[in-house]
Length: 395
Length: 189
Image (cartoon, rainbow over all chains, first blue to last red; front, side):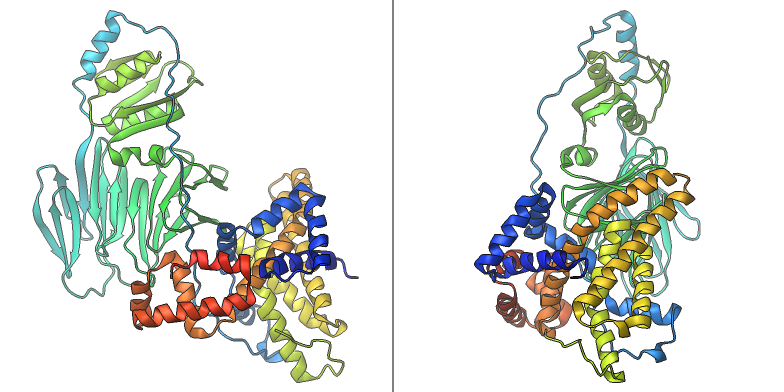
């Protein structure tokens, strides 16, 4: 008997189970194998689970034999020696994943139970903070020829025509509209300053919400076989369906998020160590440095500073999407993580006077209020600070 | 698919057909297997291609599909474990890499079973006639709706529906009951 023969047999039994072809004897043997170890049982459950099978099939589809043969021919041998007759596989395809219902876990919001530093200095600081408003709709668009458009709440109407694409602002949205056939790939960049956010619709109908301190480089019309954009910072995408042109978001760290028609949030700020991509609906593929991972809704992928792709299950998507819905939601977040968001949205500079606290905070704030409203809640949680102009010093 | 591999004559034509058959059947699943162990797409392909060449150069010594399959899985596994050790040496954590390769070796058995089961399900879908195969694939892909599939393939919605039905009937023969339920559940008819 060859080495792996028992394992081939186990695989065959699992398949026969799926086909309902097991004899009584085989069923007994399969049961014995399942009962033999926890890992066998887990494997059996995994291979008979629909959602998992879909994901694994999608991974296997990444390695079509036609491509393998092409590569061997090109790099490794003289094909004349072998002349195998290979059929071309059809295009790579992905499996849609069934939606996972992520239960809402927003439950208890606990703050530290330190006494509130109710002294004059807090009141004075909060008074000052009232003058720092929340972020608002702001954006800068740079065209390929270097023209810059400044966009804010009062911008409305037609801005420019580049090739056969109109650029306009309507109801607080930047819109790129193809009015004829475009054949040249031409890029624009939208930059959102600190204290800003903006929504845009790309030429293919894809909707993008951009958070503060973020920028997106994109073709004004999607020419070619894919739709590739580059993101720095945070954005939420609702990709318009086009199975023939995958939508690809490239990140500064070299990661790529590929979607066909799906919605997801990418958080990839250059001043944070990890980039996080969270799938809300549909199916996406993340690739980075030859690693890849498929996401099902409610899953998140982090590319960490060690260059590894780390999948996270049971993500609270409300927390991830809070910024787009006008809120801050923190669940067991460090003061450092909270302050990074405050900094971007209120356009202030935050510094930590003492060693950064290791305490974790949870809570919901409205993003629309001024800085004072947020600081008040943080003060109740025991955070001490001093506001000096645009500089917030946390003790 | 029934295919007789143990052909004593070992003639030229049979050799080609055998190589073709083995490559088409095992390339994807071996790549998947290697990828599961080393978590690197490009290197996984590389390892599998190299080991296929090894099999081609020595294949006259084999008789029967199980022997060939065993050789391929074994040589790919060994190459993957070497890859993990080598990667460790390059990054100066040889000890950890050695440990890692031992852990991966234990997991490799499970990956092999995974590769075989998933590979067979994939084969069942691949064996569907072209028309309903592309409909099924598009409907899996991002859960394309009937209208979108019709648009994409340039066929009518009714044809999409009937091709889907046909695919389901054909798959029922190959993947009965639970697997049939499994496939119908992901196909919005």
